[in-house]
Length: 340
Figure 1 (tube, rainbow, N blue to C red):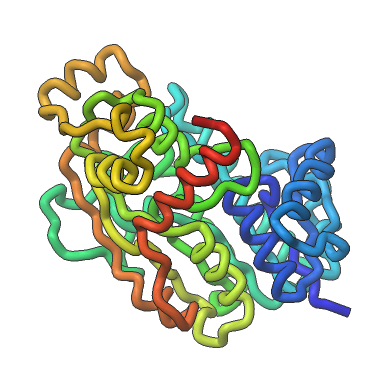
Figure 2: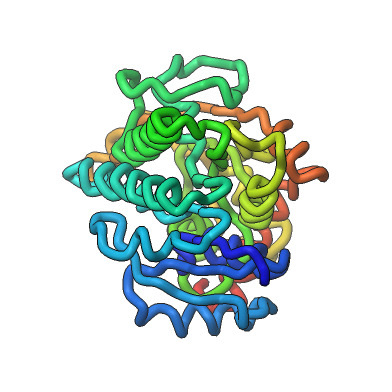
């Protein structure tokens, strides 16, 4: 009988790709959703993506409730915890992000340890690595780096991911099972959508293609393709070298203006809607007084955070998908689903 994997957050953008990769690799997948009403939609989505869903089952789990976690992990060889809140607009109360991220991680890991799973793979983020440091830092970030929660530019989301991963390592250390945990720390995740839900990262591409940004702030971010992130999660389950390790993932840094230029070149029908210019920082700060989305991200102006992804490349055994391809795949699927 195939090894069973408990996969939390199966209905999410990354979770769906991870489920597809697990099924393609021959695993039995027990996917968690907050409400079982979502199960049929997830099954339909994965079937359309070419997955064999005969080895897929569902359980209902809530990051903020104890119910069902132990039973969900029972009989599983591995646990993949991808479920965590992600937003572009920061909430007024940062605990709206921090509580589900940290408490959900704690519930997942404790259930996995109680069930005796062989390895737990946690979806963390570069947010737990690269923030709160000197804005002028030129050196790329590595697995040895941690976000400084006392530093500048630490949003509620950054704090939530940092605290959740810190808590994961604490739990595993206390259990004497540090080698039983692996974290995947991706940068901005782009790539093909599996259904009509654009998630969060794809909203950036939507706004660019729809003409929602006549000019763009000086925002720069590392980009990774969702297919690589999903493949890394699956590889980390059994790779002997992955135990007790963190894997930063970012293929290339691109500015919003560079993303717009890629889209203009690859999708000429949208060229007139795409921005050509960067806004001066002073204007962005003034405009942010009236735009909550922008206001929560002012700390990103002009900051470039590069990642060392060589360990992830070694884990996958191949080069990463180019960032441009990830942006293009996002746009292609948005167009196919008529979301732009």
